[in-house]
Length: 420
Image (cartoon, rainbow, N blue to C red; front, side, top):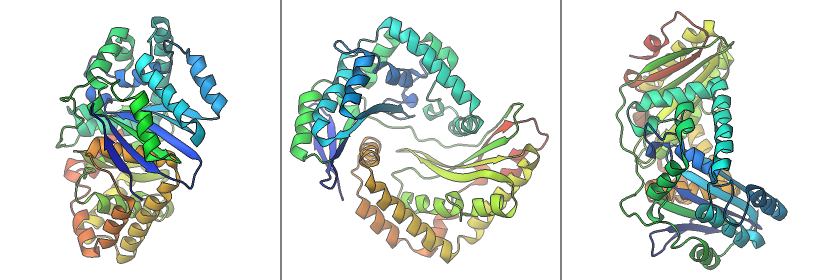
């Protein structure tokens, strides 16, 4: 299964995959405007804009938008990341054009009414408060900021209360002018819709409507981390510990192998982390690893939720697991399992139009590539056991680790326990 890309005269790109086995269509507009494109003064503007695009156009109120979508039995939503903002719809095939028109209306005819802006500002501030109360998220966001240091990828997606309170309508419009451009936007359409119809929808509702700015091509600046630590003491019951280690980018030749290894290191119930930290020692309910990859950057993360009294022991166990993997590699059984788990994830991930829409859009925008699941699986199956372990000798470099702790005050030096 391979999607195809179509380039339009204004620089806009469409990635399309027809799936006749379904009656649904997913349409996504992904533009390279995320928190990494912001500065210290307007941090949070990408996410604020995501909200504001839904607050009314020249012909539709915010209520009109959702009532019209609900009347179709469709879904409309958006999300913001560090690298992009995505607006999307899910609908039955016969309503795909109506959804494309609504998305176009949001993007090109939004009025950004000042009263709506002030109301939505309160909503975003509540979202920041909700995020601040999720201590696992706080630890994960903090460790990402520590890892990237002065790099733009360190900025929080939601911004801060101070920056969100200061954002004006002019700030939002100026940000759109600089970042929402054809060359920096990908439209992804997946489902029961032909290439000809998909192209016609783009031509009718999107082509020629984005500003042109050939210089505004998406990219993240490569970063070499040195490691850092931050403790956030709160009177809560659980200690939340997040670790970040240098890893591969999504365009690295070892991306597929590293992604596969994540399953046996800390991605499932049979993984090293789960088996040792939870099953053998009973120190955590939640413990896992994850890979975060960008076009030119990447890190491997670890999260542990444990009792503050067990924090040091849990971190020491993670350090021991890392040392063993780097020195001795994974077993052949673990290697085979990791390949099979990654293969299954690629295959099962193709069941969802929405997941495919996001997958193809992300790869085209961030890596200028049309990813092919069959090629990914073939690459997986060609990985050799010895090569796999050689790759992992370079992963989880403890000399450049970052650590974030959120929980009750403790005397133990967790950073010293993990940093070589």
